[in-house]
Image (cartoon, rainbow, N blue to C red; front, side, top):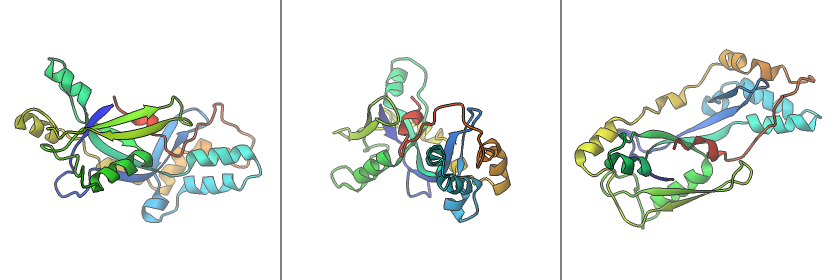
Length: 219
């Protein structure tokens, strides 16, 4: 996937919104995610309490559940799919900025590029450059990502007018930082909390990964 990362909004220093997030599937199969209040502002977190109890359980399956639900660093950025922009120029639907969610593997590579004098600020709309994010593997456990910068600088879009339109259409990432209250989280993960110390089991295979970028690429 070849993408162009948008620059930070005015007043912001980074194009990345980074949060500590709990995510996983409830016993019913419903997928859930929310910002961890403990790692964000030091408040108590029912999901962290759940993890601690499961890690200390004598049941080995409980440890696997705890790994799935532990808070992980997730990163959000706004990108333009270069493939969609090419289709736009050929008469297709207009390409639109999209939210790209990823993990620390891709983030570390992107930060390395920004610090590298040979590359620098790849988000610059006029003299920045596209990024090719290559995926190898098919499952969460064997998937690897490689971040490859394009060799030559390019514009975000062909005209200044279109660049301005795309920047004005950037989604707002502020909602990614909303921290739910303790009682809200208890309600959200109520059926999960019922499995602590009991025999109630999930009816699905748990899937966990330290860096599950695979499911969040929006194109």
